[in-house]
Image 1 (cartoon, rainbow, N blue to C red):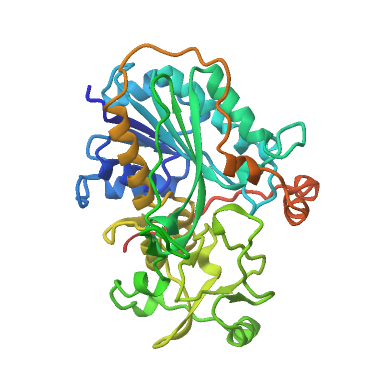
Image 2 (cartoon, rainbow, N blue to C red):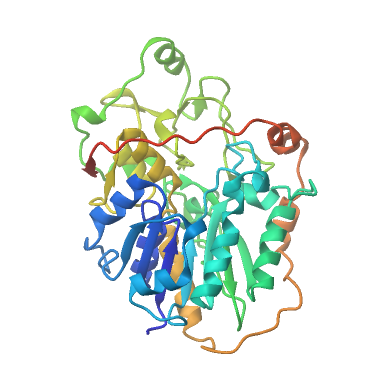
Amino acid sequence: MARNSFVSLFSGAGGLDIGLEEAGWVCHYASDLDQDAVETLTANKGRRLARSVALNEAFVERADVRHSMGRDILAKGGIRRGDVTLLAGGPPCQSWSSAGHQHGFEDPRGQLFADFVRLAGELDVRWLVFENVRGLLTARGPDGVPGTALQLIRAKLLSAGFQTAVTLLNAADFGLAQRRVRLFVIGYRAGDIPPFPVATHGKDPVDGLKPWMPLRACLSTLSPLAEDEVIRPSGKLAHDLALVSPGSGVKSPGKAETTRPGGHWGYKQGAFVADLAVPARTVTASAQQDWVKDPVLGLRRLCPRECAAIQTFPPTWAFAGNRTSQYRQIGNAVPPRLAELVGKSLLDHVASQPTSGAVHHLALLPLPDELAKAVRYTAKEEARNGQSRRAAAPRRVSRIPVLRTTAI
């Protein structure tokens, strides 16, 4: 088996898989629990991309990782134990997200990483890529101390034989029209510390960096919206949004959160008018609350096709389900272009590393200085992510019916 084979768990709409395959990896198995996401993957299987054919070698299925077994994955993917180089995935992030209540380990979704690690052992992979929200960096473990959740996850990986490299990547720093900061963890059994891609863009570019891509530049590449893609606000929301300037929300002005790493901008309001002159704020699973003041169409909501473009999904990628489901799938995805850069950096590194043997890791590598400093909560973050959130009742997750598959 070639050294570029991988298995994908928590695959969602396929953002991470697209990027890895475009980087030169080959997926042999992909699964998700969400029916719409699985239909999205199935609808796009065999779709020709810029440098690859999507999921062409992959067995795609709906599966719950808590009940998945490595031997079954190997059989369905037509591969043998030890032939899979990489396990990739992004376990559900709601339990760690600063946009949620940060229940962390108290939420069953926060424990899914244990099954991710279990399957890494059953598949006998030598590398893994784990993507999650930035909130995991400061999330509390059972001891209530900020940052210990990530340390527990890294310790779990260490006990399974994986040393870990950790970083935060802002999509805007790599030419995407979105200020999206995500935590990436690469696990490795032996060899040198794997590198992460180096930023090519900056908010205030210096040393040869290019400026961030504005949202306007991304949206300008799309064909005109169809009539059924245009949704305008009504009632009080229309009145409130008409009064705010781009870059603001209906409850409070949007402003940069200098207390957080990566220059991320966060907003507490329920609806937000995007500033076309800067990258979009993070596309989330509830992106239907993002609006633009279109010079031609007026005040309207960003449609799923636009959100997918901001996320760098291929323009021909199809999303199953109703509009709400499509927003959710798109917002939960790893941006394919960012995944491609991570995958290319890792694949180049893997080619120079040993194919067998293991290192007995005695201790975790320390976090990079900039991440270690970011673990400490500010007073603002303490109020947002502290005990008040842990005490809040978790929201119920409802199923969304499948209505159609829409090409974008």
